[in-house]
Length: 114
Length: 113
Image (cartoon, rainbow over all chains, first blue to last red; front, side, top):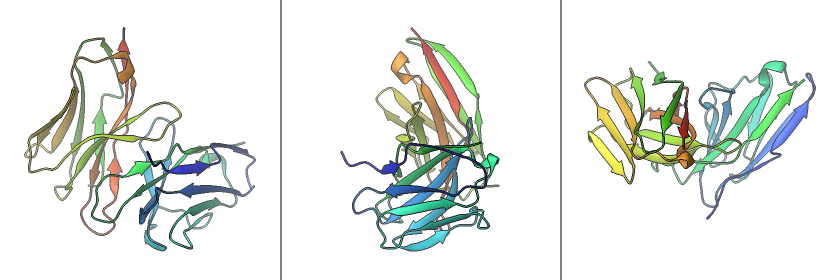
């Protein structure tokens, strides 16, 4: 069964450093999401891509976060500089198209900022 | 208006019992209501979903009950098993624009053997 791949699975960094997370969606999935999940809470959408275009990044802290999906396949989420409050699980999800409903989540990257 | 409120935060049920998790929403434009199951260290996985034109959907031991007038929906797990121990999230989709999912806070379910 095809899965969403994410790496790294765990990342420990010091505040003010830069971190990057990578996501490879299920093949053929045009829509890709990055979520942040703080411990004990539900996922919150950071950014949504349709192919290589950003559809919604209204909740992305653009002063320090950036996301790209240059060829409309895999995607990278970057934080620079990282802050203590960025410690969370970063989840990537994908689905076939805008009309299809089911989002498939990857295993996530757990970030700890010291 | 974009919030989905979920309760309880945590729930302990004996094996064989019924687990019930509730969610409430305000935005009547939401058009799709999924439930996700998440095990520790894993991403959420879709469990079951319902549209607002249906009052109930059942898949195996899992049932969603949907009350459109009360703007509430719930997940019922019949004959709960220790393997059901996980965190459950309800969500709702806004049909406009990006059609993003808004998640509840989650319920940590423990099934005691």
